[in-house]
Amino acid sequence: MKSVLLKTFAWLAVALACHLAAAFFADGRTDEYYLRSTGEQRPALVLGSSRAAQGIDPTALNDLLPEDLRDPGMLNFSFTIGHSPYGPTYLEAIRKKLDPATQNGLFILCVDPWALSAPKGNAQDVESAFPEEDRMLGKQWIMNGTPNLEYLVRNYAFGWGRIMRERWFPPEPYLTLHENGRLEVHVSLDSLKMAEALKKKVDEYTDHAKHTYSPSLRRIAYLERTIELLQQHGQVVLLRLPLHPAIQRIEEDYWPGFNSLTNELASDNGLAVIDHTALADELLLTDGLHLAAASVPSYSRRLARDVGAVLKGSR
Image (cartoon, rainbow, N blue to C red; front, side, top):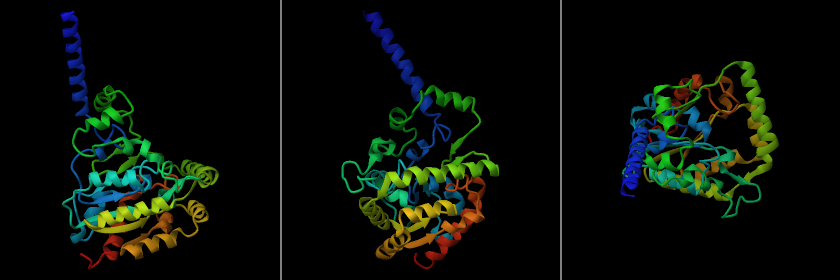
């Protein structure tokens, strides 16, 4: 019996050691979220859904900002519309990731109608308005530290052996999460394929999203709470990201007063607001919504210029 117990404990120790070793190999190829839950708390953040995650490179942006707005610690802390719409879950994650000692941070909050919507019929219901509570951000307690063992235990969808295998034998990447939080999606820029992706996205929004979601007063309230938190630590900019005119028309039909709401939020809270929705013709959008990696540098230049302009003389 004693021998059996000793062998069991030995195998458990070996398994634990292997898992710990694998954790130190986790990186931007592990999945599309992991790196944002590692490292230190940050003094400057980009917030939003997958549009922001793919479209804003904090390093490139920081290099181009006016000197008094730069912060090398800026992190793109955006996820997806399913994980990080504005609400209690995202607000709590932001609290954990934000360096509480920050006094002069820059916070870019990307807003769109879907980030302020909830399942139709439940938009004001306390229990069901925030389905993201059951997803990764809602389950994750620890948002800092490397490696983040809690994330790998609770939220990594594969066996840990895959982490080491892909470090030694990396496959052709589809997704790369950079250490600054930007998600690079490796997709074809063939015009026909992008047109097909746009049609699919238009159909999805027309046939599903508009009939599944409705504007949520509770999410608007949580966006204001997020703004209030961040204004204690620096300056906040509301940003509308570029999108294809076909999808813009769908959003305007879904929420006719959204632009007015954005401007009202900015006015009521003393914020700067930047509207880049009309820039789609100047950039490559892989599906009408998400900036292609090839367009991120040029968009960074435009965004840095406009952020500098709207915040000129305010620091």
